[in-house]
Figure (cartoon, rainbow, N blue to C red):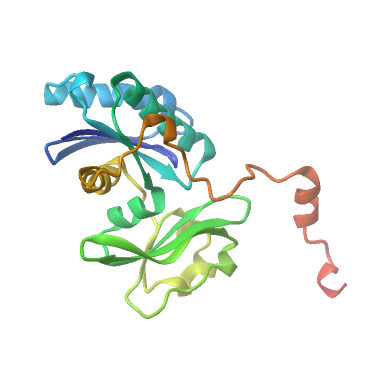
Amino acid sequence: MNLAAFETSTDWCSVALSVDGEIAAREVRAGQRHAELALPMLQRLLADAGLGAGALDAVAFGAGPGSFTGLRIACGLAQGIAFARDLPVIGVSTLEALAEECGAERVVACLDARMREVYYACLERERGRWREVIAPRCVAPEAAPLPPGRGWTGCGSGFAAYPAVLREAAQTIVAEVHATALAVARLAAPRLDRGEGVDAALAAPVYLRNKVALTTLERAAAVVKPGAEAA
């Protein structure tokens, strides 16, 4: 199987190409340039492999949660390639890809969701697959539930943004780990083998949060005024 994968849910623009299980990948810290960079990156990977886009059998993408714009870009790229060639598409959880990239067996995956919230999940590897111990959610960092037991590794930008608040969630923390297209490709391949790919029209991001920004009134209400705690 020849599989292309995109992961653009964070500042990183990451693209991978899996050819019969051998995965090559490129990534760059893109800022707001994901839409500009992703397709040329895939074209370079295809050229390096001596393949054309017509040789693809499926497309995967990091489905979220993450940046709303980034998720739409990855999903749109996957759909565009798949529509043109009638290929199956599979979306992979960004938090699961984060856990896969981390490499630990018990992972607290946590992304900074802005607006004083985090995207948060606890996953454990079980018989080669990731099992959700605490399901993905968007919560205030201080409200994130602690995983059971010990041996948890915390990773992702949420731990960099709120290190003091989240320090009890994991015994080891590697905040710099981010989800990659390579991890998306690794997770997508066996699912596609099991027939879990969908028609391109059915592919969709997973946002977890419906609001992109606070309103003016909400921002004003969030400001703690002197003496307000005693009111």
